[in-house]
Amino acid sequence: MKAAQVVLRLLIEDKFGINRNIHCQVRQLSQCKMSKKALVFLAAGTEEMEFVIAADTLTRGGIAVTIAGLPDSSLVKCSRGVNIKPDIAVSEAKSRGPFDVLVLPGGLGGAKAMAESQEVGALLKEQEKSGRIIAAICAAPTALKAHGIAIGKNITSYPSMKDQMVEGGKYNYLDDKVVVDGNIITSKGPGTSFDFALTIVEKLVGKEKASEVAKGMLICY
Image (cartoon, rainbow, N blue to C red; front, side, top):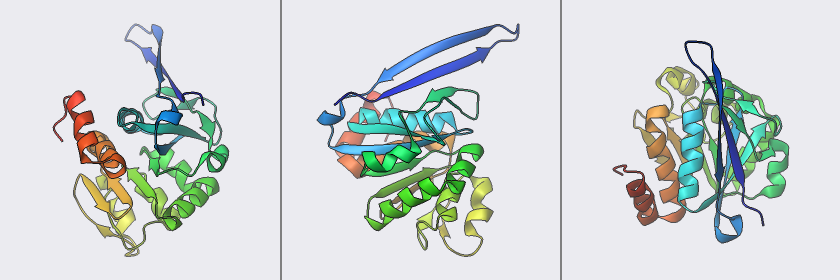
């Protein structure tokens, strides 16, 4: 089984108008050596910090990460102009599963795309029905609401999404950085991305491994 691959292409333009392409290739560990699997969604307008920190931290935790692009596997332009190449199209995700966790990064554009995607909705509903983990950060909890996921649970989100999340009384909104309610994990935004990702690692492979990963990244956890 081949190792999954994430390709990041950063397009940087300085004040003189000079464009420089930086290619960073991150090869993940072979999935055959990993017992846990994660699917991370990626769409135009996704918050790249939240996406990359989640994918990288989970990989450090020994979790096999697959990136599912919306609507397909073509290059995705994120919210701050970083372009990322998914591993697969979201339509292929079901055949690659089941996954131990589905991760929804934030970013307004990405969250909207996930909220409107029937394929994402079907994957989320099956994940919840099977009792497996769903994790959403920043604006992405709005996609959970759109698909009727985690109704009645404790959740959090980016502060400006609070009114939208509490409307209709479907959730108990908390202001914590990360909220865990059963198999639902939610978090606030870019500044809480490491806490969010490490919480997923802890949930999947244990506190000891999460602490080990945090220590290697010089993070107090």
